[in-house]
Length: 228
Image 1 (cartoon, rainbow, N blue to C red):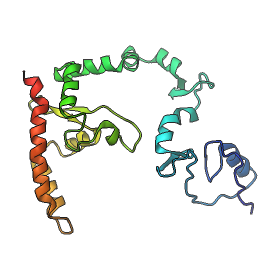
Image 2 (image 1 turned 45 degrees about the vertical axis):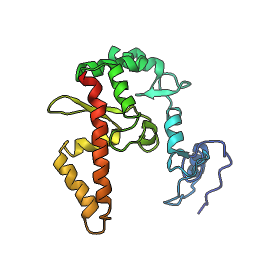
Image 3 (image 1 turned 135 degrees about the vertical axis):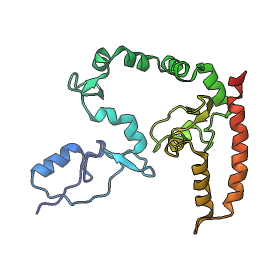
Image 4 (image 1 turned 120 degrees about the horizontal axis):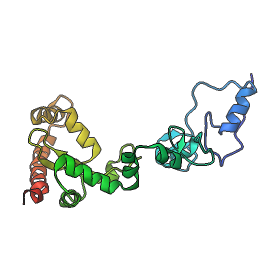
């Protein structure tokens, strides 16, 4: 049985089994039997960040993943989506998509006005009142980015019954509220479970109550500019 030879192209992205793409297929076609499980190799220099693919950590993969798929329209250009480069994709995309990509701020301002009846300045005023942080977890968009990949603006949160704006949240907290059905009773039961269930640290309950009072006061300030 042929064994796996070491890859001689350390400057190339990792593909599989510690080899670049060309070395992997050359050895596989030569009859090399690869072991079933090989720990992923991070070759981008960020060994402390989890591996995502092609030998890259999560951060580098998110930055460079477009270059690992070639478009069918112009293979020499970076891939955008659906086998198309940027230019060809924009030429075929609906005008609404083109406007969103070319001027995301204007598109978001239109969304705020249509859905919530506020302006983009109102949104940034709420964000400023909250210190640029999520109203619940107090993380900035950079700290709250999912899996360390994408930095997203704070989401505008509103009461689905009254339609009134409540504040701005990171994506995780906004989704979490939706999964709990925006039900304070269920959320309080979840807090009690985390603080009082067997094996939990019961002393956390007092700190949680104080934090809730503090956050409620901050949230009232966040929507105050819209009441003027």
